Image (cartoon, rainbow, N blue to C red):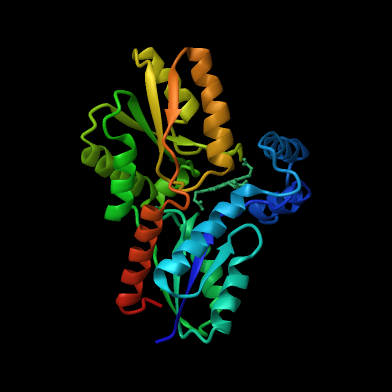
Length: 293
Ligand code: FEC
């Protein structure tokens, strides 16, 4: 068996002038409002992203470390930017691989998130290699341990967060919310935490209801309950990027300041060697079981 790995991430625009094309890709052909585009451009500018973008460099470091750990070719494929998932699939096939492991840098399955990555990768491989696709890894022991290590011993109320999605996924029996709560519960138990809760973040105003509570409302509710110290523990993301650095570090912090709450956040896994070892273990296991496609 000759193997290659496609490591998938959401992707971020390389330069500020890429933002319109990036946003159009996220919208998938649906109209882009000029106000939302201006707002998104402003958020990237405020994070200092102009001629280059350090957010994609984190994914590259993770990719390189994973390739070294696995001693296999690993190619990055972005859902909404370059290199595309299709580019990574081509590169994997070009190595002569007859088996491709597909791993998304997002631990929880939703048809709207990981389902989309899978569709792109399957379409690009078009049967030229077997695909061992990892659907979710939200209870992977190394991941839960890593989160537990970052929250153990805190006296703050821990709020686990993840990207919201349109609430209609619940009617479709999507496992996303259940898996998120499983990660939060397992991490809280492993850390011996008693005071914790879960909230969503980063909902887009698309005109339909999204999963709640939103982090900004949740901080208010915690404040009303007398909580004064909060530690944010994102579980649906694994790297420092816009949704962490803007939605939590800027917007949630602003709300906490208004409320007089003390707010801190755990360090994201990024390319932490323990996290890379966990990703390697996930890929090895996926390759060890018979292909599902
Ligand atoms: O750092 C960066 O530059 C990119 C950060 C980024 C990550 C991310 C992860 C997820 N998203 C998920 C779902 C949606 C849905 C919509 C949506 C919209 C955006 C926009 C930006 C954006 N997302 Fe994202 N997401 C990131 C960035 N996301 C920018 C567009 C502007 C905005 O709304 O703020 C709504 C699309 C629509 O308009 O119809 C749905 C999910 C994840 C976590 C799983 C994953 O990483 O794939 C789910 C990182």
